[in-house]
Length: 157
Image 1 (cartoon, rainbow, N blue to C red):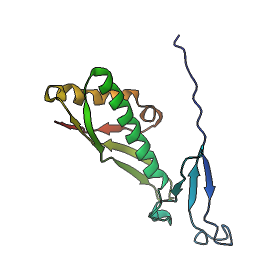
Image 2 (cartoon, helix red, strand yellow):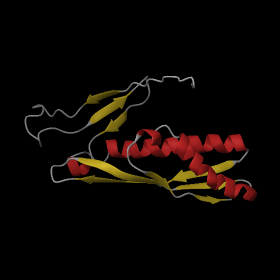
Image 3 (cartoon, helix red, strand yellow):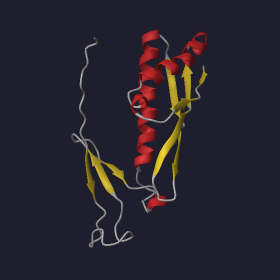
Image 4 (cartoon, helix red, strand yellow):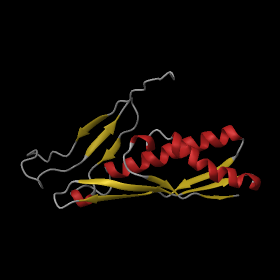
């Protein structure tokens, strides 16, 4: 039986959108909030503009997409370093699709990661591309969601 380790994370979400009358009506408050933890800079949050949020702040859907993209990148870079593949640039233009029903309830149906990776040695391009599959399987966040996370990598030198 493998030995397991438990990791715990904490955040504080503080609503900052009270306009003086609280939630007295659906349009009478802002969805603004701050996400903080451990003395790090706050992340300004809100809801998606579709749901009366502030488009200049991060919404939960964007943060979920960013977490999947970050996790994949970090797992991938680790695997490349272990295999001796030198990555010199990495940019992911990820997209997520969410559907809502007529009651307003919704869920993500898929996320597509589109990492564009530059490697130093042209002979490592094929292995570097193949490592995205391994990174996908080791990404903690991708292993925690109930919708498909696909990837369409491009590797160049």
